[in-house]
Amino acid sequence: MSQLSEQELVRRDKLSKLRELGINPYPADLFPVEETSKQVKQNFKEGKKVVIAGRLMSRRIQGNASFAELQDSDGRIQVYFNRDEICTREDKTKYNTIYKKLLDIGDFIGVEGELFTTKVGETTVMVKDFTILSKALKPLPQPRVDADGKVHDAFTDPEQRYRQRYADLVVNPHVKEVFMKRTKLFNAMREFFNQAGYFEVETPILQPIPGGAAARPFVTHHNTLDIPLYMRIANELYLKRLIVGGFDGVYEFSKNFRNEGMDRTHNPEFTAMEIYVAYKDYNWMMDFCEQLLEFCATAVNGTTKATFGEHEIDFKAPYARVTMADSIKHFTGFDITGKTEAEIRQAAKDMDIEVDDTMGKGKLIDEIFGEKCEGNYIQPTFITDYPKEMSPLCKEHRDNPELTERFELMVCGKEIANAYSELNDPIDQRERFEHQLKLAAKGDDEATEFIDYDFLRALEYGMPPTSGMGIGMDRLIMFLTNNQSIQEVLFFPQMKPEKKPLAISEDAKAVLEILNKSEKMDLNELKGQSGLSNKKWDKAIKDLTKNKVATVEKTDDGLFVELNC
Figure 1 (cartoon, one colour):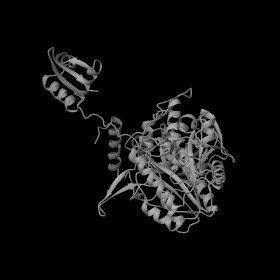
Figure 2 (tube, helix red, strand yellow):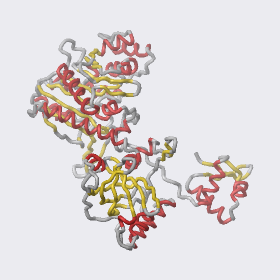
Figure 3 (cartoon, helix red, strand yellow):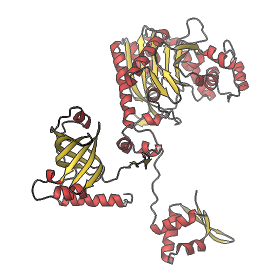
Figure 4 (tube, helix red, strand yellow):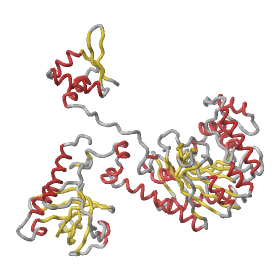
């Protein structure tokens, strides 16, 4: 166990005293909550009896009476503790000892009481009885507001908030709104698909082949079968198998996992929605997509408009449509149509875009678009008709064999939806997979390294014309809630391991404090400044070297102690 703070020790002492009084600080029995704080306020009636529960968030004790705040899932409500109302007989222990001395901010309590309104018009519960439901042993971060309205000790450090989301949600209740909107988004999308007659399904997370996207997978091993398994990078190939099987429309909200970099828009674990509809093409899917997002934006925010940073985005249909070639030509002056790989590579170099020989034609075009075009699309815009090399699972364009029937939806310079007229020619699909293998062998780290032969077999049984679309749900909710970082819309984003506090003695800490001022000191001088006895000094310096905090170095000038970086 880590070293306890003074406050934590005090709380544990209070815990013991509660038990000595015969009170179980963690009772097993149900507490009969009748209403939330919000419902109490909405259904207010003077003198009405209520039963509520929540976390004690503030107290103002004034002798025999005390005002406090109770926080539950819906907000806060004021409660009034009066000694003579709670302790109607001579024994005043419940108020004088239990409430005043043994309760702390953060404790969960149940309250039975009557409603009244204070002189300033605040709905308040007159406490007739209370029950300790859970004793908090660690103090909550406590933001304070001074007389001028300035907030002190706010729990705002992002790393701390993400690591301790449980504390973040308690002391920053507004954070909950983001996640409530996230759920509204999922519910709205489900409603839209279900009304259209499409079927929600589940597909495997552990897959023998990581297919459906170009990404580095997480690998594990199944002991019984003695085979490697991969956490899914996409669910596309399984959903298409269901279209082969006879479903007209299927969708899934899938947890995907990619063993790649982390930044403000990428987490190794993320949620995607993919939908596949038989007998449709990408033109139909564009119309469907803009109707879907208009519906979802309205469900989440009550309007089609959303603020993201300095931009106001409007998700109202219809959206602009621009071909990939036209976009590149517009922003760079270079026309990719009919150009060879060598010509495109040279053009990229001329634009000061970093490219190398491992990049195929599709990757080169992708780099040009990403560097010069993508960031310019703020309002929802469909980029259409991607070169074939960029889309190995997409159907060849009906008017131009060099292109595919694909679109991506751009918002605020980021892609949030990707859709195809799905490739259903099994021979063409096999050839494209084989081409991807060649690119991977060449060194292209974004090319697919696996061929899913079972999926090819499924296509050989026949898949009807189909359009499919994937939407990054985390990124979409970022735009709808004005959050610049993906960590803000995930309850528990992936974090680096937490640094453990140093398990060193108080004497060693004192030596470390002296050493911090100069980073390197003569050993004898350091010992002299510490004022420690020989025995305590030996123990302190051993603590520092054993924990690799400092190093003792022998030089021609003598012994020196140096801080390790």
